[in-house]
Image (tube, rainbow, N blue to C red):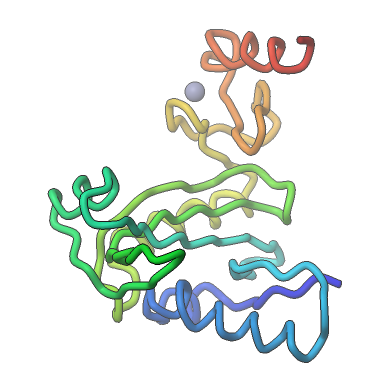
Length: 185
Ligand SMILES: [Zn+2]
């Protein structure tokens, strides 16, 4: 069985980031206790104009001195929590990788960004707007090339590679060859 929390965009954009990286994990744990084993997704689904969008948040963390730790603290991230695993202390940072896919589990990647923002507040206005634009465009048949960012109609998608969708220029120029190599070797 599949379980994933579904919400509307305005509900999504009003929740603090901590909801997606903490509360949601707790919620999934409870569901698992009640329903037993199954496929539980740690992301949420946004329902918008009759389409479903999968959203995943990953919180960046690292042990003291690790590359992640140094890199993100160096650009203004703060430590917002810790966890201990196998005797190592992992510092959780207020840096998050956010990914959005359109039209169900196997859908194209619509949005992927790593951002630094307040842990206990909703997403910054600008990021929320970018996500809205990506999902709203998708309901109107428009997607963004995963390489160059150009907006194209769904029927103009020249090729796909994993969750990426590409315009003719990027597909012919680069990704077609990559995809062919992966497929035939
Ligand atoms: Zn392109």
